[in-house]
Structure formats: C-alpha cells, structure tokens
Amino acid sequence: MLGLFLAYKVGRLVVDGRVSAAFADADLIWDIERALRLPHEASVQHVLLSAEALVRAANVFYAVVHFPASIAFLVFMYWFRPEHYIRFRRILAWLTGIGLVIHFAFPLAPPRMLDSLDLIDTAAVYGPSVYGPPQTDTLSNQYAAMPSLHVGWALVIAAGLIHATRSRWRWLWLAHPVVTMLVVAGTANHYWLDGVVAAVLVGVLLMATSRQEHPSPSVPVQVRRAGTGTDGPREAVTNPALNPAFNPAEAGVEVAKP
Image (tube, rainbow, N blue to C red; front, side):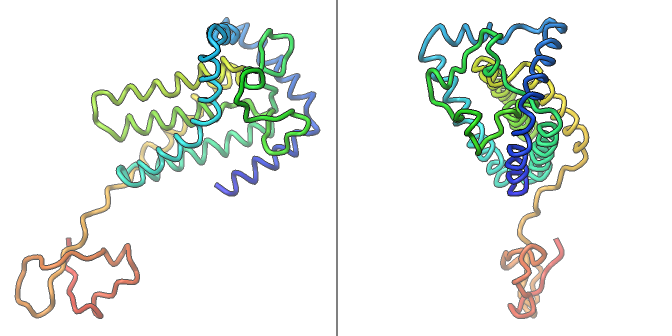
C-alpha cells in the first residue's frame, strides 16, 4: 500500500507537465460517450441540484465513504471470511496498480474542469470538497479520472461480499457501486466511461483470480500429553505451523495429526 501511495504521488508530479494532454483526452472521452449515446452526466447532476441536502449528501459520500468502506471490507474478510481475504486483497491491489499505470499513460481532466459541459464542481460550490485548486494541489492527482477507483473499489466490495456471504439479501450490495457511479458522475468528478473501464478491469481480475481461493484455517490442533496413555484430546494449542514460537517438545505435549 505504501508503494502504491508513492506511485500515486509520482503520478501527481508527472502529470504537471501534461495538463494540455489531460484536457485533450477529456474531449476525446466526451466524443466517445456521445458516439455511444451514453446519457449526459448533467442529467444526474440536475437531479442532485434539485435539493441542496441531496447534493451535499452526494459530496459527503464522495469524500468520506471510499476509504472507510474499503478498510471495513478488508477487515471483515480477514476476520470472518479468511478463505476469501487474500484473493480480494490482491484484486484491490492489482486494480489500484493498473489504475495508476493508466493514470500515467492517459491523464484525464474530470468533467468539473471543462467549462463547455454545463457542469459545476458541486463540492467546490456546496461542500465539502477534498480537492484544492489544481494548480496548487500537490497531494492529489486531479487528472486521474480514468479509471474511477471509487467505482472500481466499490465493485470489488460488492463482488466480495456477494461471493463470501450466503444471505438472500446479499445481492443488495450491488447498490453500493451503483450509488457510487451516480455520485461520481453527478458531482462531475468522473465520466461514465471511467466507471465502465473500472468495471471491465474488475471483471478481468475476478476471472483471473477465480482459482485463488484459500481454504479456511483448520481448528486448533488437538494435542494430548505424552505418556498419559489416552487417545482423546486433552488440550487445544496453537498450530505450530502458524506460531513458530510454540515448541511442543518444551511444552511436554505430543501434537496429534488433525
């Protein structure tokens, strides 16, 4: 994660000299969306602007849900679904890494920066905003719209929870990426195609890692004290393979095969 963060910072420095390319790429994406007859992002923004509370809620969602939701997902998978944890952790890491490469290769100005699109920067107007002026913002790469990692991470969370749980309500987790896509488009932080590309990457990574499930950790190894003459379990101890500090010989116990 530290390496990915450093790469993100490097991307911010690299894009400083490619601002004109970022705006040219924005025109290209806009033309492709119109050729594909995708709806105008302004249609979502107009709905948000119909009520100040709604647009503020969308800004808050964009600003504060992304990272906490991803962390909560990883913690849940680690503690409660460990057999799926490694796979989905890898998917998140690979998705972020691939996204950073695309950010380097294809800088893209978000729609809120294009005056010709009849869109406003809702966060700057209504708050809260996580970005400063692009010219002075040295923390974030504001020309990294393609792909949308907000949408990509939300899709990974939904896919992971649907896959790892068995409730009949688990499909409702799909609402998370849907709402995220509407929010990032309505707040003019992303184009529809940013979300589409993120979804394609997530789909490819899910297929590529489909065989990387890990079995659940077995129950603690049952041991019996040497010389007791009993065959039944007497005591549960930590598996020595998982805890190298445990020495059965020093503890005077004999490890029974599971």
